Amino acid sequence: MEELLYGLLLVSDNAVAVTIARHVAGSEKTFADLMNQWVAEHGLHDTHFSNPHGLDETMHFSSAYDLAIIARHVVRNRILTSIVATKEEWVASRMLENTNELLGTYAGANGVKTGTTDVAGQCLVASARRGGEGWAVAVVLGSQDRYADARALLDYYFAGYYQTSLGLEPSPLARIRVEGEEWHPLAVRDDAQVLLTRWQAGYLRSFLWIDTANLTPGLGEAVGRISYDLFGHTVAELPVYIGGY
Image: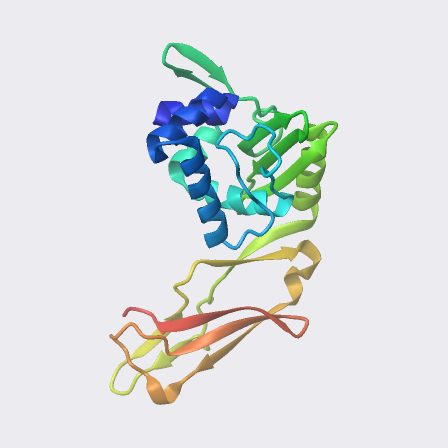
């Protein structure tokens, strides 16, 4: 299966797509039904699949937004992430070269997938990552030069945006004393991020609330919350716990 995935994702082998579909679901139609079930479960309203390979059919379509959401799930999978970032790979005594020309030519490029048909034109779901920040995904459909368009979109993102991690920095205010015990630091366990334009970074404010009447150390329950505010609007809210429990 892993070798088949290399054939599918590096060189868009349609026969591989059919082979995977028949193996997983028994038939191409049943596999397409599974794809549409996944789409519905994830709330994507502008996508419908009629086949597993993407060749033109009347009821086979998607949108840039939906493809970006699908790509986000791809890059969360360790195996798929490795495959789509591979420039070339020997598979079954055959050298496969990734059709994504951004790999090795655009700083941080690491995926995801090209696509071309007579009706859809040049399409590309491009991803890149720089400086340990989250993945940036750009979707180009019906393009005359998909690589130039993807570069322009990714350049725009990296020049003007960044993802900042949300947490609770250690300070005398970010601690609490439980009756009969010493002071304990407060902590945020969730791995959360927020997308900001670079000029907004200095305006993000945090507000901490602690429920002193309901402190339950050792039970793993939240003892309060921290909210992150930007110009009067809450952009995120996370539970706060007592560190060390």
